[in-house]
Amino acid sequence: MGVKGFVEGGIASIVAGCATHPLDLIKVRMQLQGESSAAVTVQNLRPAFAFQGTASATHHIHLPPPPPPRSVGPVAVGLKIIQQDGAAALFTGVSATLLRQTLYSTTRMGLYDVLKKKWTDPDKNNLPLGSKVAVGLISGAVGATVGNPADVAMVRMQADGRLPAEQRRNYKSVVDAISQMGRTEGVASLWRGSALTVNRAMLVTASQLASYDQFKETILEKGLMKDGLGTHVAASFGAGFVASVVSNPVDVIKTRVMNMKVDPGMAPPYAGALDCAMKTVKTEGAMALYKGFIPTISRQGPFTIVLFVTLEQVRKLLKDC
Image (cartoon, rainbow, N blue to C red; front, side, top):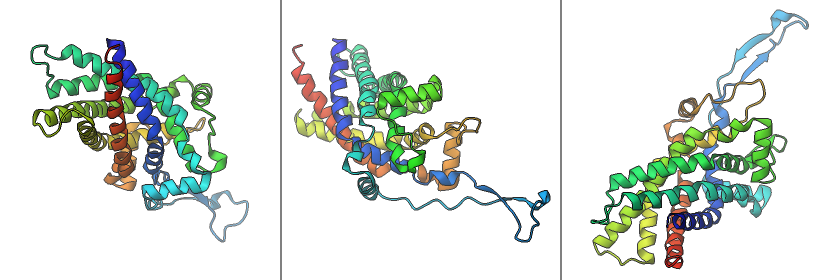
């Protein structure tokens, strides 16, 4: 019985993840806009009339950081990707998405189903909202821990196209990405940003799955619609909106920490999640934490709808199994 919940959740997650991958890629690119302005440029400049060979003639001049570039909308980002690398580039990193959904979402959805059934009062056949949130927090944390390597690979593969050709990592697949990271940066790099991944997953799972159940139950209890496709779509869209609002700030920081390039012997651009958040807000403003929100809701809405509609259909197919 428990295994069936993992299978149902896994199938639904893989279908939803692959179907909405281009929107996720655009979201990642938008979340990285303006990031380069976070670092202060320091140059050694020689005065115009300095004599050559005079050591004291070189002065260290600290230049203020340039203003952050104007953010570009999701349509413009998508068109730029197509113009530069072709339409197929919208599916860059889809192998990582496939692996991530297989590991992360299968675990969180299956565990949510198991814990929800275990904690539901058999007499009332109902689980309070607070308990649903608690189940979502636990399920999200476990799923994110399992799926973090695929998450790091996915972010890097999606972000690669925004870099100059000579700076790109050019991972061939998710397997190549994970093996290269493990070999050149150490196994620990596969869990870079894991605290953020876990926090985000807890927020997404608690808000997405719990709110879907709550919306669905409310619609049915009030007799607004019958249990069918309309109810599933309405509850899914509401759940997607809630999850987007709750998770976007953590998602921005997670994307930047996972994507940062650490050169040997050099200090990393960010010392951690808090440092990244502070630098982002300082240089780009507080609303930078909601960069990519339009593609986030544009992706989270369809993703959640496809996820739960597919899940309900898979449940029907496997009902007698």
